[in-house]
Image (tube, rainbow, N blue to C red; front, top):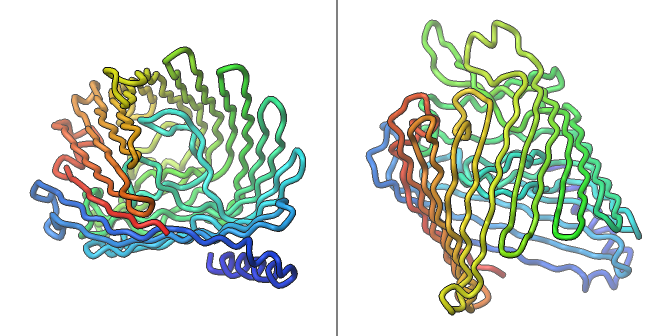
Length: 409
């Protein structure tokens, strides 16, 4: 990916040299910060620590041509973790050229694309790989190399994607928290003989009418989520190996605003190419064909109790046909507080109840700003499960609180 970064920077410099007036159009922004996580329970594994500190930073370079039809964006990110070497990583989140015409847009490079409307699970969001060691909420992503062609209409848009390269996610190391019982081998298996270089394709149609937004998507290529197979050394299992299958997926996401209600739905149907019997016997793999859905609502109370605070009440229900899924039959209940103050203070508190496995997880996310440059965030997670078949059982001693400070420039 260093070649892509060098190429993008080279194109940017050429554009500046060819048009001296473009120098004034270069914009630089970003943030640096520090994070500390505290785990209040004795770890399951000896190498793990109760305190985990890290520093991070992100820079965005943006250039736009004088006529506004062409632009270049470069956004690298990096984190240094002082406990888990695997969490010390960097990624080129975005580095792409964008050309805009009257009804079409073409972008080439590395981008982050988000699809979806629900809060508790991002089912249809399939373009980018989730950056698993950054956050548990599924919203931190690795940049995806792509070519994207978009057609803009009065009723919505149509987007076509060619994805020529798969970025391998990084997993927590021996000293890291929120990890599997066995360490993850950082050299994954691919069902396709092309490995990381398999060409994936996606198509999305966005349709907007009245108070409704509808997205219909299709994807064919390498599964972004891994399944894990045991790796044997002799007769002993010493680690697990990520396996990425070839899949075909169609999805639907709907969001509608009716009075004070925001109604949400995400649903997918996925076909996964079958795996050989030898591999299937080595681990519990997902079904070849399955459906999953998340739906619910958010009810907003503007000016709660005659104050400046806006209160949101959220409810979502998850269904998944996959075996041992955290979302097989679970309910998510949450409140969102927007204080509408000078610091744009917000609090989200929610609980996900897996009544099939008698387990639950709870999360609190809070943030506020001090002036234009400083943002303080607090994140807390609680995991509770006594059922070994539940995915949350692996995290039963990983309750934590994270405090983060960011400086924007």
